[in-house]
Image 1 (tube, rainbow, N blue to C red):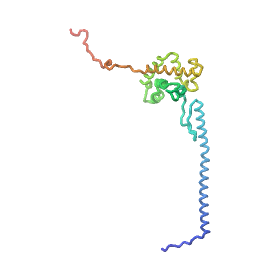
Image 2 (spheres, one colour):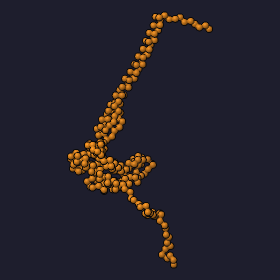
Image 3 (cartoon, rainbow, N blue to C red):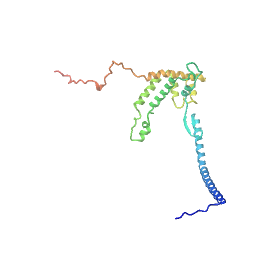
Length: 255
C-alpha cells in the first residue's frame, strides 16, 4: 500500500496548533493546582488541631516541671524529663582549676551514683522488677497467685535499703528518705524538702547538705552492698542435706 502523502502545514496553522497545545497544558496545570489547593484546604483544619494538641502537651509537661525537647518544625515532643537535685548539682560546676578545667562539679560522680543506686534499690524493693510481677497483673490472670510479686531480688534490695539507712546518721537518714519520697527531690521541690528536714534556708547551705549526704551515702552503701569474704582455705559449712547421717538402733544398742 502506497504511503499517503501529508499536506504540509502553513506557518499560520503551525502557530495555531502550538497555541492550542499550550492552552491545553495550561488548563491541565491549573486543574492540578486547584485540586492540590482543595486537598490542602481540607487538611488544614486537621493540621491546626494537631498543632494545638501538641502545644497543649508541651505546656502540660512544662507545668509539671519537665524539660521538653520539641521538634521546631512540627512541635512534636521528642523527649521529656524532670530534673532532680542530684542531676542539677551534678551538672553545676565551680571555677576552673588545674585539676578541673571545666570547674569542679557540685556533686561528685560517686555520690551521684550512690543516690541513683539507692533509688534503684527502693524501686526494686517495691516490686518494680517487671510488669508480670505487678499485683494487678497477678490478680487479673491465672498465671500467678497472691504473694508471687515478692521476689528474692526485692528482698535483697529491701535489705540493702535498710542497711544503708542504718549506716547513716539519723539526720541524714531522714533527709535521704524524704528526698526519695514522691516528687520531693525535683527541681522545684528539693529546697523546701531540705529546709523542712534540716532547717537550712540559705541556698549554698542547702546544696552543701546534699553534698555532705552524698559523701556519707557512698560509705553507707559500700558497707550495705559489700559481700562477705570467704578465705580460700576455709571450707564453707555443709548444709543439712549434705551432712552424713548416723543411724541408731535405740537405747538397747549392743545388748
